Structure formats: structure tokens, C-alpha cells
Length: 238
Image (cartoon, rainbow, N blue to C red; front, side, top):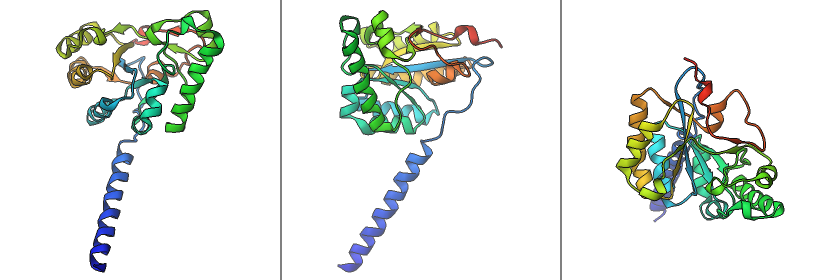
């Protein structure tokens, strides 16, 4: 009996070591890329994390691709481990409000509450407060921009993946519409979107694109606080 316990303890230790190694290997920081000299695109995923976000993280990590996740606070609260895994893998985490409300219909105090509650949930999961914000539905006004207290990052390629839910269409559309410096809007809450990711990456890699986070897309410049940014197309000068 004692021998069995010893063997079990050794096996458990080895498994733990293996898991730690897996996390460490997936925690590599994004590669340094100068998007003024090479073609860059920022893939962004909204509204998660959900169960399928874990599958998406696997697909991205297998291809050494980094992306940006605009997370909803209520989903972060439900799935903190997924957000933590995304951050550890080198993906950027952004604030997408607490419960995906139309913030233009709220007071400044309620807008601030939406962001601060989400900030807290993300920081508890990842150890870092998100530095950028994406307004639900892209809806913003002077109150929202002021209350956000940080850059608002929107998009230049609207895939409408929520409307069509067609993986083949999504791959073709992203490939046809993406230019250097673009920010692509997708949603990891849709299975068809996650299914399309390998095809999107393959198609854009064939065109010479590098996949970067939103912060990388604009480096070394800093995005303006309280203003909306849609892309960085002007930066690319091969």
C-alpha cells in the first residue's frame, strides 16, 4: 500500500511539472515586429471568454499567433482561468464593458462603473489592468469617450461574423478586405468564427502578414486617450 502511495505521489509530481512546462512554453512574449516595415494585422475577438475561447487559444498558440481579446466583465468573472491563460500566452486583453450594454444610453457614472468592474475582474485574473477599451456595438459619444479614460479601439474590417455564421465566407472576406495596419473584428463566442481561424491565418500568412496585438500594431507610438482609433494603415511604408 505504501509503495502504491509513493508511486502515485511521483506520478502526480511529474504531471504537475509537465503542466507547468506547458504553461511556460505558451507564455512567450509576442515577437518584436516593426509594423512600419512589414505587413501587420491585429486580429481581435469580442464578447468572451466562453468555453470555445479555450479552443481558440489552442489554435492560435499552435500557429504562434498573438491576438487581442476584448472581454466582457461578466464572462471574465465566470471564466477567469481562460483569461489568465490568454494573457500568459502573450495575447492582449482589452475592456469591453461589464455586460455589453449600449453605453451611450448610460450616465457617466454608470459608464465608469461598467469599465471599473471589468478592469477589476481582468486584473484579478491576469494581474494587469487593461489599457484599451472597445465600446459594445461600437457605440460611443462624448460621455463614453471621456468616462473611458483610455484609448477606444474599434476596427477597420467588420467581418459580420455574428450575422452570417459562415466559416468559409469569413475566411474569404478577411483575406479579401485586410490591408496592412488593419484591425479585424470577430467574436470568439461563435463556433463558426473559431472554426475559421486556421484558414484566416493560412490565407494572410500566404500574403506576408504578421499577426500582432493592438499595442504592437501602433508601436512605438501610444494611442490617444479618449479618442477612437480604427486602424494604422498609414504606418506601413515598405
